[in-house]
Length: 173
Image (cartoon, rainbow, N blue to C red; front, side):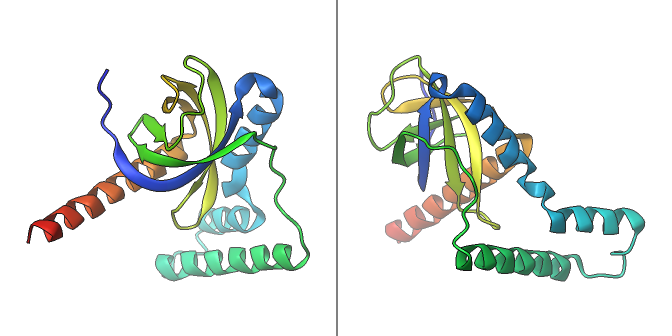
C-alpha cells in the first residue's frame, strides 16, 4: 500500500484505546466542544441577533482571540490547567497525509487501535483528538476525527506542502 505523506513538525500523545476507552471518548467529545466556550457562545448569539453586522469580522475575531489569551493567561497565573486524560506515549510525528501519519519512532502494535491528542500549530492553537489504527510500528491510519479538525488537518497539510515546494524551488535556484 502506498501512502502519500508530507513532512510535518508536530507532536502526538497517545495510548492504546483499550487502556481507558470511556475516558478517551469523553475527552474526544470535550475537545470538539472547545469551540463552545463562553465567549464563543456569546459571539454565536450576537451573530444570530445581527448585532455583529456593522463589525469588521477580522477585528472581531482578533478581539475574541485576545479575550481567550487573557483567559489562558489567567489560568496560567492561577496554576490551573485544562483537564486532560493521561496518555502513555508522547512522540514526534514525522509526516502526515490526509488520512495517515507516520511517527518518528516505532511505538505502535500493528492492528491495534489508539486514541491520540495532537497539538495543532494553527491559529488559535489547540489540541485535536483522534482515533487511529496502526498499519505497522510507525504508520497509522486515522479512523475518527471531528469534521472541523479534519478541515484544519487538511489545511495544515496543504500549507506544509506549499512550504516544502517553496524550499525545493529555492534549493534549485
